[in-house]
Image (tube, rainbow, N blue to C red; front, top):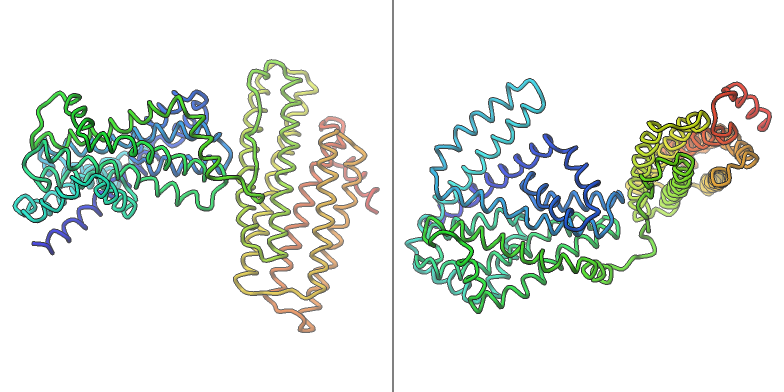
Length: 571
């Protein structure tokens, strides 16, 4: 019996998680862009942020996926910490939908609906002509697999209603709320899904594992449910391990929210008041058929009450997590991109605001490049990780500034501003490409570290010269953008010429070192890749310099004029 229970539980839980994951992925494919828009545009008001978080989590059927998504947006600086905390509060409400879904299994014959759903979903997935049809098929297929998993767990747990010893152990745990809460926390951390662990509890209760006195069973099982709410925070913690400081704070916000909620609800559970509240809320009698629904009510009530308590104190929650996770020197203190939409009706002010953000973007792109070069020189893996985080911020700059300028182009603007817009867009794209090359350098550095490659002193000296030259050019470009300084922009072209000459010179000298046996072929390839990427950074910075020289206007400043001026400066 025990072997059958273990195997049935493992198989049923696996099918449940697989079905839920399939549903989640299908729903994200169907409505992924809408979800992104909701998260990034409807979260300024804390109440709306909670509602959006609940709605999105209901849609994708996974609070873990939702919190990981929020962590990702924070890493890209697309949300503020307070917006993220509001979304996470909502996600805790939205995740309770799965418990309601599972509770319906008690009122229907699962196999009657799950098997046709699997067949229909599979056919739509295989035969569907459009991506939307195939994704809908995956959704239906996942729904069927999820219910088959519940069916297997029901079958595996069925013998427990006749196991007096098992019932006594579970009841004893339930009458020790702290132990039961810890058990629920540990199990949910293990499988990283509160939905799955609560589904298992629902099936256990339905099969009489907590006894056939349903009032006692409900009181016994509620502490396990509370522990599940703490255990589910582990997913966000894992996702934020290598994230930005804001992402780590959001993950801790999720943990603090649930831990404090359990701390004040658990004593009420021990006194019996919370369960009395659940029985008062339920519109139907407590029995074997309704025990699952009562548990769903308990899960929802905890998260709704906790959200109502924390919502007015969202600023306090933010202050707590800022204290728990202080900013470290190497963390990026990146502000969100500041582009006020109400200024679009004043184009001259709006475009000046865009220019200021482009300057900030240039500073950030330079940071990414220097982090990569420093990580390359010192074999510092943390700097290389930081390069990728900074590149994400640059990508966000590109998206926000491009969107803003596109909206500005639809307004009534002067010919001068109309001519500036495409040049500014190209400047934004060039800065984004610089950060891409920074990531390329980080990847080259990782190869260097993995292969335990060391450079000769002469190669190190050449690397330092490249770094100095490209940094000086970047400083000139930033100064030219800040002050619209044509003379400084012209000066930067000298650096570009130096980088081109270094590329040719250093390629030859490194080939000579390989020929003489001073360095290996692998070291040679890595060094040449480094030189080429830095030279390409110079090319993109040159494009920006040329735009400043042209007064951010292409009319009257053709390529030949700029090329001639460039040649005159660098010969």
